[in-house]
Image (cartoon, rainbow, N blue to C red):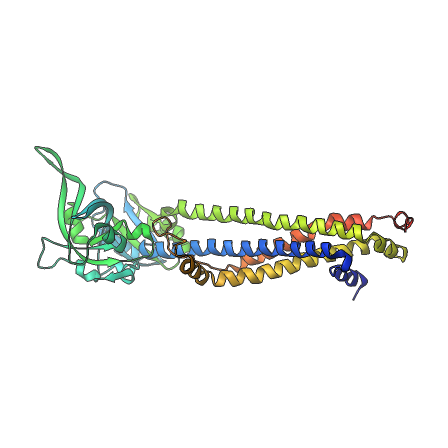
Length: 418
């Protein structure tokens, strides 16, 4: 072992008279550890939020939709579907009708998005069939009782309206018909045939589904639809696939992908992740100042040792290395401990949150405030690597000034008074 490493590691061990310096060393290690741990946990939660939201959104929405830039919707949609399904990258396609209505029950009213779907094909483009907690998609098809077609509600919406399976519910459209008394809203009674649960309060409280034929009759769309939903073989290539669809379909058809439909949400999450990284790096910077103060006090304490080493022929570069090694070990130990504890928390975060909620009896993540009800945690090892490298570089940078000052000490001046 070279003398720089031997002396640098030895200085980490305090003698009886240097206990205070040892305590500050421990505090410096703890500061780096807490900063690294916080960074790993917070960025893992942010990554988990992004992944979970993306999965839930793509379980409810299609990857891509094709619309027609004209009033009245899209006619001859079956021909359009065949053209779309012939585009490379398209897995399946299904027609849909999309409009805002009001649902009314004896217990209350609520504004919702009513979506007309083809029960036989919607399962090929979304995860609606897997999200059903009661009923079946086939139940949406009109039965003998044509006056009461079926409707499927989100579980939160059903709770809000205090309705259950087979209960009647009134659907009111603001796009009514003109009468001698003025514009009258259109109303029709439906019967609840199922309920779905996505885990996202925003969808479970504002979405309702009816059959495509029922929606066409209610909105007087004849044989037209709002557009075509598409599932692709790669969610990250929807821009290229959409461009190819527009080229194939021509004007007046246009496309909109899941990234465009949720751009603000994911942009906000990305920005928040970057800001959180910057803020939490400040914790590591505070720990770096502790490293600086620790090394400055060690240099002041070891003036005599430095002078003797220089008198014995140790070059300034050797003295510099001694104190850089000491500060570097503090940073590396703190980073390693922080990485281990951060990964342990990140991998077990959901269980820890559940334990805290059960212990204190309150919900940390409210469903009616946030998009999801549980803390998702996804460890991104690229983020972890970036955190580790950043923490070690900051720690090494913090050692430069005190190490440089130590290497410039004049041994004659120091030993003159000894």
